[in-house]
Length: 114
Length: 314
Image (cartoon, rainbow over all chains, first blue to last red; front, side, top):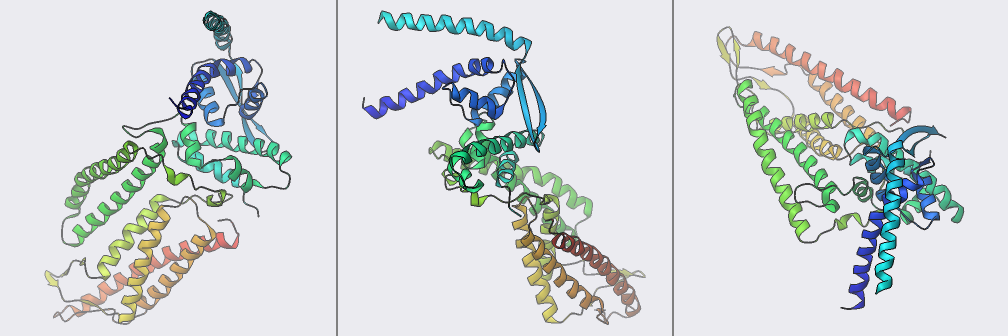
């Protein structure tokens, strides 16, 4: 296998890993209220780049599942949609956070044993 | 007035989505662009919206695809999905117009109106199905060949069309103009014939003639051919612009001049039928009355477009 192949494969797997972790990151960040761009900026400042084409379908899906509440507000001639974690979202986030830590530990254990 | 390219971009992204979702999507994309632009300008002082879009954004259809959460249709994948839907819509509009013209031609050729309407209703789904299948076939072939909508790669902000204060164009109106112009052109070219006879007192007056000089027929033919091309072009546009309104005003003024000439012609209709001369006068009056109604409609349309041009509210 040449280097180009491995780079492509790593990139695909990296995207898959990120895709799985993004809902957790978004839920965690929405413990405080954000609109789309401010949420993207906050996540980016914490090292998690996410483009609008990924973020908006994701928050819409999370809202549909009842994990987020949203509200439109006018701001300087523009309309912004603010998102906040719902009660169900908080509950789910707590459970997912436990799951995430367990998974992290397990993966670390597996990696170290190698 | 400077064009707000962000509004134009957000509008175009939203336009690919279902109508119910457009307003929210527009607001989200527009706000994103404005916010990100403010940050970007801090690092790139003096640079404008066009440079920002060229540096940071892709073709609106690509963003629309990602905003849709990778939507697919049948065998067409996300990268070609919106191109496929656009092609289907355009093909369907053309099929409907062609069927309307065909139905009208059947009526002119002597078929009854209910018969032509039945032919329209029964024939349309069949054609739509075949055309839809053909479009799907093309896109499935593109998908299988690994094509990834490369035609979207050359996009630049210069391709955006302003939506600031521009009135949305009615597809129905453009389709009607297309069907009407096509039909009238076919009649002027003698491909479609009007019913050849008029019934009068139990007799059929068959030999009536419309007396117009050659240049009037030529002018009508050229104007109608232009009308067909222009309404086809308008079908592909979303908004009225200064140029489109100016062309419409020019076209309407030419029609008004031609119609005025026709109406003021003495003995517009003649017949050699015995006893038909008096009757033909009545028909001529009715015809001229109809033409006056058309002139009023065209005149009103001209005033409407001219008013928008004067107010610079396109």
